View 1: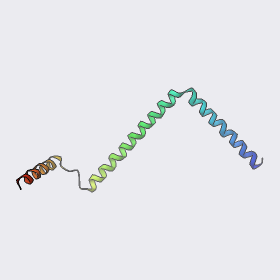
View 2: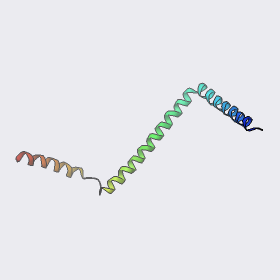
View 3: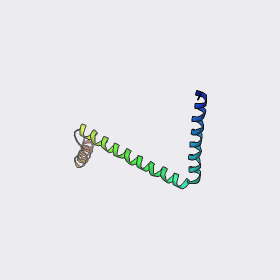
View 4: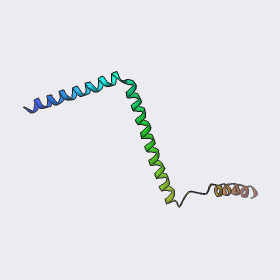
Length: 85
């Protein structure tokens, strides 16, 4: 078999594969769309988990999460002091 014949043969197989996929998508649009959206949700959830892990690692590097109550006291106390000056 010549190299050109082999290339044409591979192209023919690839064309048939694309044709089969096209026919499937054309005949099953609801299934394809449901699969698409389900995979999108899975990807978003995985990305959210990665971001949560990265956020925790950043807080660890910063020495822990700030105490929200203490932060509020500092902000309100600072505002009062500024008014007195």
